[in-house]
Length: 457
Image 1 (cartoon, rainbow, N blue to C red):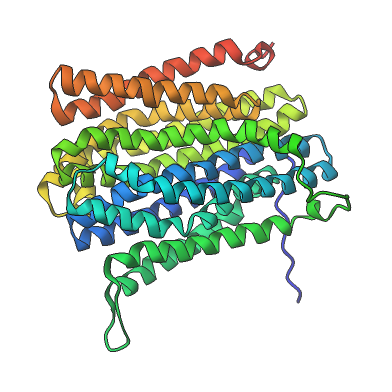
Image 2 (image 1 turned 90 degrees about the vertical axis):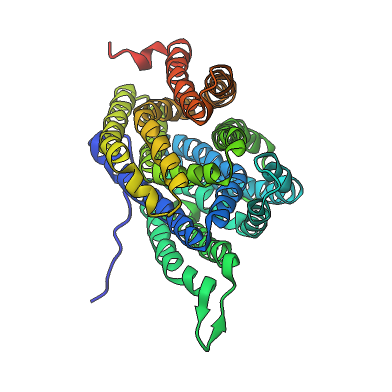
């Protein structure tokens, strides 16, 4: 018997909004959870090697993810641009903007590799003192940079798949990458007796580069398997400055939002460096545990972009409002599950990564603050998704600059320096910037979103 593969439904303008949302959001959330578990595996093995190695990975990954931000941002832009073409029922236009998007990704990859090679060390030096973990962070970053093309192709290309209604492909690839990372990383670190000698710390980034490059390749294969790309049109590969400019206007603000988000981690690490490598390691642990719950929320809000974009293209505004409400509801459920876990089991979670009591105490304290912040992240990310779908990505940048630059620096200084609350003040500053950033985001919505979209009448 010949087995047939059922195509993923790609029309998001009819049928149940909840079903469309779950079909996109749940696989995306699961995929990003595997991505988070992937990072948790790295943090676990680094913890077995020592506190310096764990701090080195925390800093090195934070530097690398600044460049990865452009993959996330471009994915959101392509999801919106291709989604609008899809909603307008034009296969020729879908193929054209998809291929222009892939050309944009290629250009972006080359530019970022050059920038990363020239500037990565400076980012790491800014957030560290001249301790052993600085050299480990730099080594980790430089190896990870080799995997940047795979990361960018995976996450930017996934935005195209989302516009087609396909959220399963990346999930499958990330699941396999997680299994490969969990199974082969210890072999690279420690080696196999009488077979080959392990490469120690290097094994962690090397395995990440290999597996994520495979993820990127798989996503590209899935894109070119789409029937829309078999539409017979001329000159689809020729760069069109108008379309590239349109993608750039969408991608750059969104990419900057992600970059500022990741850069805010560097701001926190800058303030924590005076408290030693234990504080840096604790923050790295906190981010990975937090991401286990935060990335499903991000997955839901990523799914909101193509749903909103297609329905905006079809002028079905009530479906956009309903999708936003469902996104917030599902996000709050995730936050409700995370809150008691962070508050009750924070110390236990931290001990999974480190046996150093200074590290586990600091990580457990920060997790409690993050438990309070998660519902605020749901609201901010959901608002950003709707603004992205409306082609108002520049306002998501304004929200990010306020929350993760201006407010973050101001409140951390206020609580940690002016009020002299030390490391507790750093955590209070992060929470205060998130709270005021949420209020600022609602103000942006009220001033910029068309009233016919806000009102049900």
